[in-house]
Picture 1 (cartoon, rainbow, N blue to C red):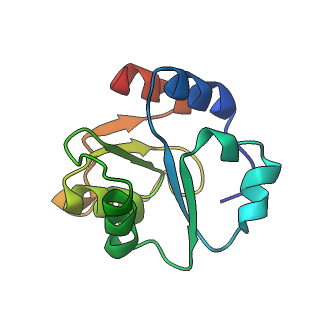
Picture 2 (picture 1 turned 135 degrees about the vertical axis):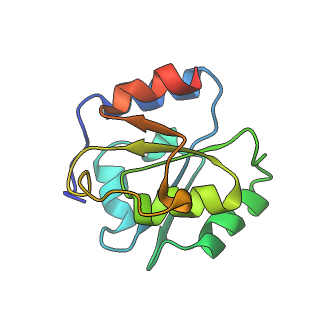
Picture 3 (picture 1 turned 30 degrees about the vertical axis):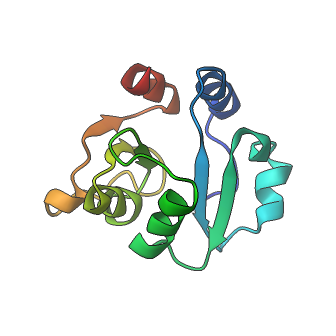
Length: 129
């Protein structure tokens, strides 16, 4: 939420794309889509959706429109009360990046409990590859 990338973000996205992963970004509307482009990460994503609020419906639309397999998909997020809760409710494998502004926001129930917890973005490669 700072408008900056975590160190190594582009390298991680590039490795995932090279390995054949389809990447999708759902971001809430506090940053315009142009910022995603300015950060140089838009080309890594098959689709970028800027929404006023992250909710189950937006994730369901992304899954449906892009014919994604729920069982073969992951949701990665830094908020257990947003991306992790939504991903778990849809049956996605959830990865919590416990870093930054929301790192102290702890799960309060099973829907907010991630399948995996990582502390640096690069650790995602150990989970999915």
